[in-house]
Image (cartoon, rainbow, N blue to C red; front, side, top):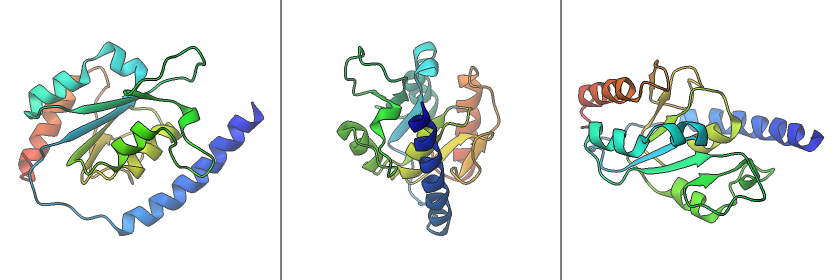
Length: 171
């Protein structure tokens, strides 16, 4: 238990250093959004079909999703989930499929979670997506667009996102 808290503290320090470094390198791409990735919690993705809702409202196909779930030795390996055990003490993700997802140059990544979580925030920060969107209560340094909405209101969230993306000529 002590190691879990220590790991969390080490990751938080590395995260803060990466956030400061990432803010210097921010640039807005000029092309339209074709590919979308979603990072969320398993509790959310099990209740809401995020891929379908976001794909329908934004008009994109094949949105990719990864969910953070609690680690359990009995869980089978999944290409749609990652756990806190999939990040090492250096702040690097070790699960190969999730690393490939983060390194993919997506046009948009959506952080669909409204609670602070160092593992989800690190995943969003390390994503090579060109444009990042999420909830306003998380971390103002992570996203280009922050939307203030409740997690349960997926239609309101995606409608608001679509409106902002049209304003900045991304859709």
